[in-house]
Length: 355
Image: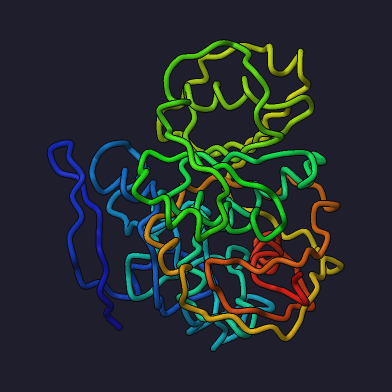
């Protein structure tokens, strides 16, 4: 059976992406075949298809780091025909055919079943950026950063991952400072829960190796001088979760924040998580209703890169918190979690009697 796809090829040293019609025989090995409903343009996808960076490691290849759809065929235990599923990263769009197609075939270990109330559209609106945001919040919690410790800074705040991070942090009771280069988005960021908004230029230039303490923690999507300045202004025993490299991959700073203030830099990387049997991670579930297509559609306009390795997080971080995402994703009820990404999805969506 044939299907439509966007296929990346390389000619004369330049990558081009064109619509094509492929056969299912062209799909790569895997024990789960998915009829793809939605994908999204991940940051890495943008770099790949515009030739800004060599993201795609084998050609020809279907780009797309995220996909969600319905299972058409499966020989993988626990994944059945008709299941609604999501797949993020795992080399999609880099070494394995990704989500920019009507069909995908992947190993079942990559697949996460969606909790019953959710649409495939919801999962892709969050995408890898949403999962990374949740993992970053868990990293702050794991480091002992509670709302009473002080403000939390989010850089790249108007992007997909930054937007979800603000919504999550705000609903958890944190006071959020949003750093953005798009000051015209101020109303949007405040609607997500940001208390203060600062111009990214205050952080993007070279600064002092250590400066006055401003925030208890931060989620950084930018890297380079921005991350250095964030660290320099983090309070004693603060935590900075970092996964971005929009400004650069360098870290032109000093060790002073680490040795003088005991600041923790917690990197997040999505190279695909392994099944960990987290059957006891059961977030509170409830009957609250939330619209499935509110501001969450807007956060889906851009998502962050594939940066979050849940294997680095402690199980104690999963505490069944009461979290309603102001981005407007539907509530859910989950009683069995067997993957870190399922756990993150549940943390983002499952709510009960939120104060």
